[in-house]
Length: 431
Image 1 (cartoon, rainbow, N blue to C red):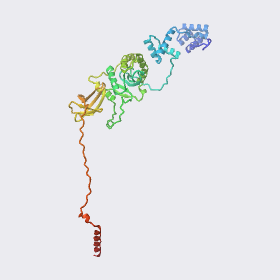
Image 2 (cartoon, rainbow, N blue to C red; image 1 turned 180 degrees about the horizontal axis):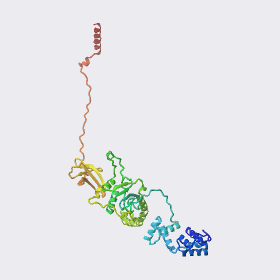
Image 3 (spheres, helix red, strand yellow; image 1 turned 90 degrees about the horizontal axis):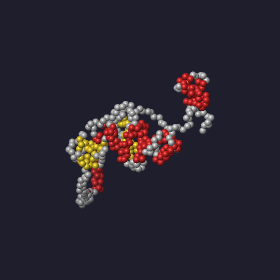
Image 4 (cartoon, rainbow, N blue to C red; image 1 turned 120 degrees about the horizontal axis):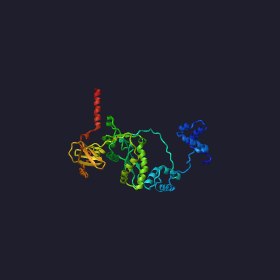
């Protein structure tokens, strides 16, 4: 601790003292000193008189070391720290300040609470290491690009099932849209996009990662290689039909806005739902409907250009027939198709060779040909196949043949043949 005879001055006060001494030495005039220090000549005369009477210490501010006249009562400080330890012990100072005012009626500044908690040992200052990233300017228009991703987290802190938050954030304004689902997949992505489009309109671009929901892992086929195209996921196909350009990020840092949003929500939203006792996905989605408008009013920013370039859903565009899983199946001669291990009978007469099967978000299935819906029914019971009569093979045993007694084979004698051969050869020699 500094002794009383040590003069503690700020750099600004040392500068004033230096100039005032120059005036007292006659190097500078009072008007020149006033111009240098941006003070009035009357104030310069006051500083000169104070320095002559009190020395260098007269330049120090008279309120230094004294408690502030606007400080809060000690009882409020003790009550805020007590409530923080009992109810908000894992809250950050900013969120804890909001809850203290909203729930407990204690209105204090977040920095004041932060200093109190550091002083009491309930909060520690953490310096985060910084990585070098190239800054990317926000888009200029609202609706020009949205970032989409899913956040896997224990949102209910064990009170309910684990789930995924499908989050949307506008790149220009930071406005947020979100909904909870059981998993991150094609159907949740399509359902959330459908809800977003109906509420705000169709954006120009969608910035997503390389999850299999958004980018197909299939290998390039020969046809695609010839045509110069790539295999598309069902989400990409749906976006193409709606005229939305899909951009795939190569790293989480590339879509930093949505990643930072998830870090914030995993802190704030989790604690908000804890205070309300939310433990199911249905309750969480109802909570978001009221929470997100408040969040957007508080934290969204103004876009560089005022125009909203979300497109309204065109008349005649059927979102249910676009935001679905489409599969082509061959129509057999008996007007049946096989899909997902089941057999279906087409009831309408058609000349189609193939039928398109649409698995929609609401769980229904539609079969179409040339955009015309076909009536169908599932064949639940198939007729049993009749077993063919067994083929009986008659194997006959081969019986050996015994030649008769007068068979030429029995009359054949090899020694007689050899004698005839020798007689013939002798006759020829003599000749």
